Image (cartoon, rainbow, N blue to C red; front, side, top):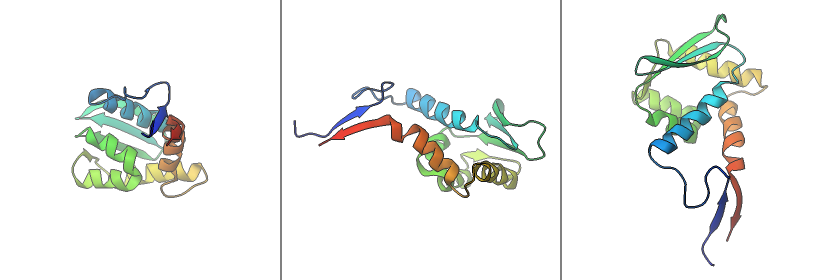
Length: 138
Protein backbone atom coordinates (compact mmCIF):
# COMPACT_ATOMS: atom_id res chain seq x y z
CA UNK A 1 0.00 0.00 0.00
CA UNK A 2 1.11 3.54 -0.66
CA UNK A 3 -0.87 4.92 2.24
CA UNK A 4 0.82 5.81 5.49
CA UNK A 5 0.37 3.08 8.05
CA UNK A 6 0.71 3.75 11.72
CA UNK A 7 0.95 1.16 14.45
CA UNK A 8 -0.52 2.40 17.68
CA UNK A 9 0.03 1.02 21.17
CA UNK A 10 -2.06 -2.01 22.14
CA UNK A 11 -4.54 0.21 24.00
CA UNK A 12 -5.72 1.87 20.78
CA UNK A 13 -5.21 -0.09 17.56
CA UNK A 14 -5.39 1.50 14.13
CA UNK A 15 -8.93 2.49 13.24
CA UNK A 16 -10.16 2.24 16.80
CA UNK A 17 -8.84 5.43 18.33
CA UNK A 18 -11.32 6.68 20.89
CA UNK A 19 -13.39 9.75 20.36
CA UNK A 20 -15.70 11.91 22.41
CA UNK A 21 -16.03 10.77 25.99
CA UNK A 22 -13.52 7.92 25.61
CA UNK A 23 -10.84 10.33 24.38
CA UNK A 24 -11.55 12.75 27.18
CA UNK A 25 -11.37 9.95 29.76
CA UNK A 26 -8.01 8.80 28.36
CA UNK A 27 -6.57 12.32 28.30
CA UNK A 28 -7.81 13.07 31.80
CA UNK A 29 -6.42 9.78 33.14
CA UNK A 30 -3.04 10.49 31.54
CA UNK A 31 -2.82 13.97 33.01
CA UNK A 32 -3.91 12.78 36.46
CA UNK A 33 -1.35 9.98 36.43
CA UNK A 34 1.42 12.51 35.81
CA UNK A 35 0.14 14.69 38.65
CA UNK A 36 0.27 11.66 40.96
CA UNK A 37 4.04 12.03 40.79
CA UNK A 38 3.93 15.44 42.49
CA UNK A 39 6.70 15.38 45.06
CA UNK A 40 6.29 18.77 46.69
CA UNK A 41 3.37 21.03 47.39
CA UNK A 42 -0.28 20.06 47.44
CA UNK A 43 -2.83 20.45 44.63
CA UNK A 44 -6.57 19.98 44.91
CA UNK A 45 -8.33 19.37 41.61
CA UNK A 46 -12.04 20.10 41.31
CA UNK A 47 -14.52 19.86 38.46
CA UNK A 48 -17.33 22.37 38.70
CA UNK A 49 -16.67 22.73 42.42
CA UNK A 50 -16.57 19.00 43.22
CA UNK A 51 -13.26 17.68 44.53
CA UNK A 52 -12.07 14.85 42.26
CA UNK A 53 -8.42 14.43 43.22
CA UNK A 54 -5.53 15.60 45.38
CA UNK A 55 -1.83 15.44 44.59
CA UNK A 56 1.38 15.92 46.54
CA UNK A 57 1.80 16.42 50.27
CA UNK A 58 -1.36 17.66 52.11
CA UNK A 59 0.67 19.25 54.94
CA UNK A 60 3.00 21.19 52.62
CA UNK A 61 3.09 24.98 52.88
CA UNK A 62 2.56 25.21 49.11
CA UNK A 63 -1.20 24.75 48.67
CA UNK A 64 -2.84 25.14 45.22
CA UNK A 65 -6.32 24.51 43.89
CA UNK A 66 -7.71 24.21 40.37
CA UNK A 67 -11.40 24.12 39.45
CA UNK A 68 -12.04 22.80 35.93
CA UNK A 69 -15.06 24.49 34.38
CA UNK A 70 -14.68 23.19 30.83
CA UNK A 71 -13.22 19.72 30.21
CA UNK A 72 -11.59 20.95 26.99
CA UNK A 73 -8.80 22.30 29.17
CA UNK A 74 -7.48 18.74 29.70
CA UNK A 75 -6.91 18.30 25.97
CA UNK A 76 -5.50 21.79 25.57
CA UNK A 77 -3.01 21.24 28.40
CA UNK A 78 -2.02 17.83 27.06
CA UNK A 79 -1.34 19.10 23.56
CA UNK A 80 0.03 22.55 24.30
CA UNK A 81 1.65 22.19 27.71
CA UNK A 82 1.93 24.94 30.24
CA UNK A 83 1.39 27.81 27.78
CA UNK A 84 -1.85 26.25 26.54
CA UNK A 85 -2.96 25.56 30.11
CA UNK A 86 -2.44 29.28 30.76
CA UNK A 87 -4.53 30.13 27.70
CA UNK A 88 -7.29 27.84 29.00
CA UNK A 89 -7.20 29.78 32.27
CA UNK A 90 -7.55 33.09 30.42
CA UNK A 91 -10.40 31.57 28.37
CA UNK A 92 -12.20 30.68 31.62
CA UNK A 93 -11.95 26.90 31.19
CA UNK A 94 -10.51 26.56 34.67
CA UNK A 95 -10.26 28.83 37.69
CA UNK A 96 -8.28 29.07 40.87
CA UNK A 97 -8.47 31.19 44.00
CA UNK A 98 -4.72 31.84 43.67
CA UNK A 99 -2.99 31.59 40.27
CA UNK A 100 0.38 32.32 41.88
CA UNK A 101 0.15 29.18 44.02
CA UNK A 102 -0.82 27.05 41.00
CA UNK A 103 2.16 28.41 39.08
CA UNK A 104 4.45 27.76 42.03
CA UNK A 105 3.10 24.21 42.40
CA UNK A 106 3.93 23.29 38.79
CA UNK A 107 7.26 25.11 38.88
CA UNK A 108 8.17 23.22 42.05
CA UNK A 109 7.50 19.91 40.28
CA UNK A 110 9.79 20.80 37.40
CA UNK A 111 12.51 22.11 39.76
CA UNK A 112 12.39 18.94 41.83
CA UNK A 113 13.10 16.92 38.68
CA UNK A 114 16.19 19.05 38.01
CA UNK A 115 14.41 20.95 35.24
CA UNK A 116 12.79 24.33 34.82
CA UNK A 117 9.99 25.76 32.76
CA UNK A 118 7.96 23.40 30.59
CA UNK A 119 10.05 20.33 31.38
CA UNK A 120 7.19 18.90 33.46
CA UNK A 121 5.03 18.79 30.31
CA UNK A 122 7.91 17.51 28.17
CA UNK A 123 8.31 14.62 30.60
CA UNK A 124 4.59 13.94 30.35
CA UNK A 125 4.68 13.89 26.56
CA UNK A 126 7.77 11.69 26.51
CA UNK A 127 6.12 9.24 28.90
CA UNK A 128 2.67 9.07 27.29
CA UNK A 129 2.85 10.21 23.68
CA UNK A 130 6.16 9.02 22.26
CA UNK A 131 5.69 5.36 23.32
CA UNK A 132 2.18 5.42 21.85
CA UNK A 133 3.43 5.60 18.28
CA UNK A 134 5.48 2.44 17.76
CA UNK A 135 6.25 2.66 14.06
CA UNK A 136 5.36 4.77 11.09
CA UNK A 137 5.64 3.22 7.61
CA UNK A 138 5.38 5.16 4.36
